[in-house]
Length: 247
Length: 244
Image (cartoon, rainbow over all chains, first blue to last red; front, top):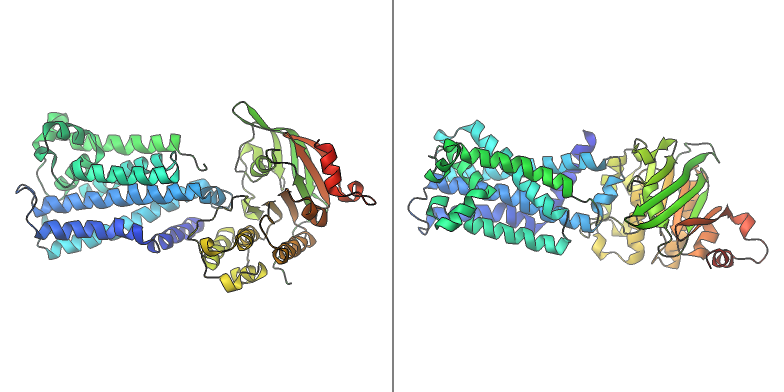
């Protein structure tokens, strides 16, 4: 445990010194929440509660997938993971430390976002907290799996481009900002398969929203959770199989 | 120069035993039935040209690469079977550093001292490798020689009973080499086994007591420096002969 605590502290220190990562995990989600919460550019169907669930989804994706994926990709290319593997920390504790640092960052992100949302008039009264926690855990598992799969196979620069590209695609058409039932049919079909749409919807229902009709098309309304659980199980398994600690 | 190391093993006992080590990368046999031993209180230099199998052999000993076959006993533990319980007593200096460009000298040395938990004072360690004036610098701002000394400091954070140093003097100036030589001498004086992979035969001749030469993945020479370098015979001549 002592080694995991020491490595977690190092991971967090490194993150706090990296301004690009801070921009990604804190400034962008807060900026989107404040901007779209105050400027009337989204469809009328997007309530403040829907926007909050979307921004929480975005923050999970930013931290678990993009931030972790990019940092791990560069650590792999600089042989940092290999070097740490030769210390008493070992690979297994290193993974636990990374998971702990992601959990702490997400807790801080969600707290900040919910406080800001409250200041903007959103009320937490309708929140089902255990559902919200479940959505966060499943989403984190799914996106960390995707991020680490890319980080563990691609060159650092290609990984950087892939993570950022995927982030933008999911943000635009993944059912995060614009709900799936507002997207054109073809896009909605793709967005339903992606983890971003499922997580945004799971967040939305956790915050007291009503599940969109598109999810009733399979598994009688539980489809969103089946989809999310599927990604949360499969993505880490793929990452564990494909990840290479060294280039 | 004061050192921070303590005597942990009786001199001359076996610290590393490599037996019939084979490492394959697909169809390529990088290490082909390599056997040798390295002892406490001695520097064993593993020499050879590029691609001879030096780094692969060292990485297998460090537990970073699983051998295709053969046995590797490090400080009495069978590393080839995945037993890494002795990691806290093993110092490692990788050829490619293993340090992020944004890592600061004192911060990372302090972190490694925490991970190894062997009672090493990070400030003393940074001073020992001559980086006290660069304590807050990042790796990317260090010169080539300073980077090597930074990497060496991380190996020393283990207060090692065995140290694997891959090309420790590559790109290091004369003063830096002398400093590294002194550190290695301090390690062996305290009973540590130092296994050194290098291309620099002059350096090997100065610091090593035992030489293992690899050529095309095989051991072609395994002897003491005293036996090899008699009269005016230099290590360079000996190595050239056996790797022709």
